[in-house]
Length: 400
Image (cartoon, rainbow, N blue to C red; front, side, top):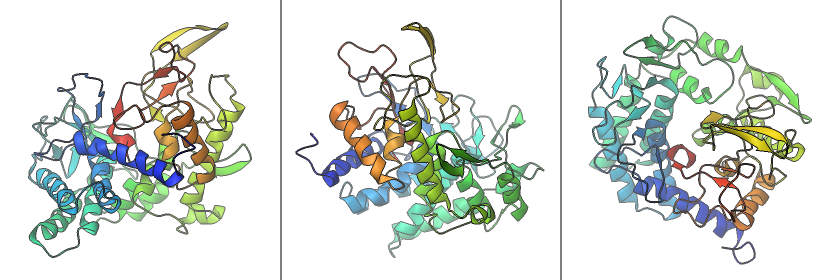
């Protein structure tokens, strides 16, 4: 696919369809669970678990796939219903191998059994992403058939049984999670990040709401900054400015903080994208490839851990890390999916970047699911690879 022979709409359609294929093919059809990540180059991933956040994104994407003609409505319905039935019937309790507890779910679940994997945490934010996907199913499948009625019933029951107030654990802000071996995680959701969605769901719960002052406690740690002539509510990683917008149109919706600043969260995300691009243009650390059409730092996989000298400069490279702008960490790793996800906010800077990733760097069409997670032009890659190191992985949370 070249930039001269394909229209913008066709290019975006191709990107969207390839991304959706991840949910089509990396899904356990018996329970609806979505594989956390995969490497399609014949790498055995039979042991790898599901991510409940990826399940939430899949549920949100099924209606879009129907609208775009990627999936028949009936198949989308059955996939959604299978998923909801699994979570409705899954083991809830304090046992270390349950699926969830107090209406929350473990971050990673075994793809076959649906039970806790890796001794991971009961995750408040990932549960919120999952519940949001369930509520999308309930809103979309509005017919009167028995299956569509069941989708709505199960989605609302699962939302209503989530004990958001339990996750406060006696404090004003929500805990990031809980483990049966050690109890609540010390860290809490406080200050601007993707937990905006978590707090909205928790405040709106019909059965287990958190008090209104919890929201004020969360926003009390907000950081308003001026960076590259942009004034905005700061969060370094690009994904934090995107995830809640999958489910909520924040245009012209303001809380007291945003009302005082005269903008909304949608405009804030637009400014964050502009800051990301300007950082890449400025390129203060001198990484290869950065520029006006090559930007996008977020929480993602990298080529490390590793360190070596490049042109007299010792470079450190990280594995999975929340990379951010402009304060770092930064090791030269770019996430194309994070740029594409900024399209609704700033199409004028995203579309040229998409052209560059697709047409110049050839990062999209050779892969069955489109863009790989990340690439790093600074890191020594395979001979002949214009983009340097390219991640072997696709992740379920990329394809929102």
